[in-house]
Length: 321
Image 1 (spheres, rainbow, N blue to C red):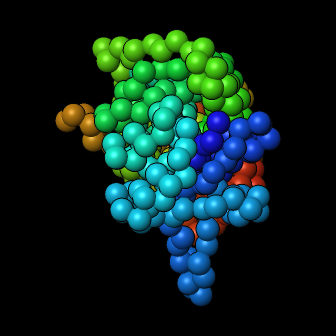
Image 2 (image 1 turned 180 degrees about the vertical axis):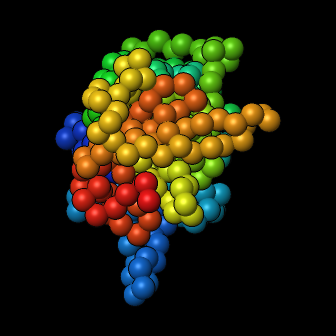
């Protein structure tokens, strides 16, 4: 089949590579417009565009997806299928062009986690299983009929970075398999149940802020879901601290004698009562109590500094002063 591939970040590259290595034809690649970056305002390409150029593929980078020249070019290519992986929302006049339709790869088991950040919210909500879904595009975002799903277990140590990479590879397999199903006409569509849908909205700065009133498991999952980017953070003594890795302490009890730690009581007014949090700090370890339970801080970054382990951090810095 003749395919037009649409994608922007690294997540899309394994899918495009799989299709290039198949017996299908990539007529063109569509990606986001070039951007000026850095002090020198040098123009940089998206990862997908760079990969496409290296493989001598035609690349289209429209500012507007409703631009008539762009739509005319897509029609000239006479594609059988559009494959969309981590791209923008396509208008109907674009996704309805191919003879066999347009499908999208989504990083969750739809209808769960519809939206811009499915991988992050899967971890933030403490799921133990996830996967990828391919579905035909419709007007409403992430609501189209499902073609294929592949599942994967979430490891307790997975964070956004590791789960992203696992789903990137799983997604590439799903994309090629979906293309083969469409080419052979051997797929069976499954309608999404809107009653089972859950949102996965864009990650904002406020979502990234750690609220120590929440229980330790919730905070631990927030850290996992936002690591390594953009990073969960807390403000302490007018400084921003990002937290990249934590460990849940069983029963909320410190693993060693409290006498080996400096302890700081942090009072906070909550619902007309005072919540007393504690920061335990030794020469190598940091523990913080929460609304329910205790977390060990394993990796963090103070404002203006690099990411480091707690032991590295404590060689020159301290939360207790």
